[in-house]
Image 1 (cartoon, one colour):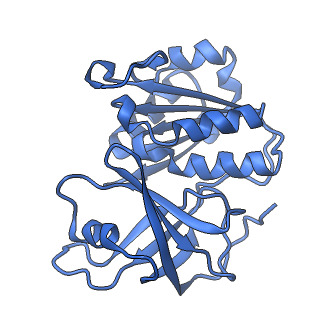
Image 2 (cartoon, helix red, strand yellow):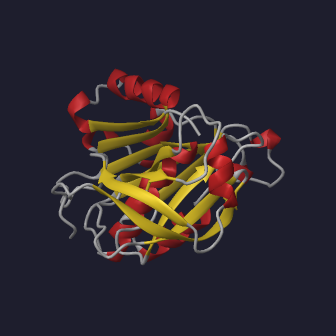
Image 3 (tube, helix red, strand yellow):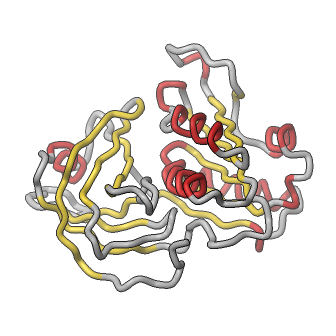
Length: 249
């Protein structure tokens, strides 16, 4: 496995390869992975773009790496809304061969080398990205730990990575995928899966003894805070919960 020991942090120049739409207002961006850049599934990196003007947050942003450490390319996945920031506009306009600067890897929200406990991943929206890296990697290395992913999206059209995860769950019997749609009536596509927000009752439906699992929570700040408090209210100790908050798109 890739060691979780800290890597040397430095700015590295790399090349943009392509982008693809993966859900409503959501795109994946692919970059060449430098030979000396290694990371642990779930970690993030900072991207600096040239020619970003008029953005009060500047030309840099942190992104979870949504690809597996074993993939040949680096992939990030993010929302591009109708009125994006100047940074997002520049990101969206990148052309093949354009140079960008990356810094990292960083972050302690990652798949452990080994786990003596089964894992539950709870994701809200684009917070599913680190779990895409973790589950893709876990499948590649035959990670011998049970993993349940519960992911919540407002509409079917926003359900990023759903088909990827279904495929991975067929390849990896240790992985179970449960997507839930909070506003199915607003979806154009039909949905026959779970509806409503992730709750202890929904989790217990699939995992009666879920209090024995360790939890990873990732998503918007409000969702993460609410889920964290909800899990503590059903007597899951704080030491069994890890969380990562996304502060904006």
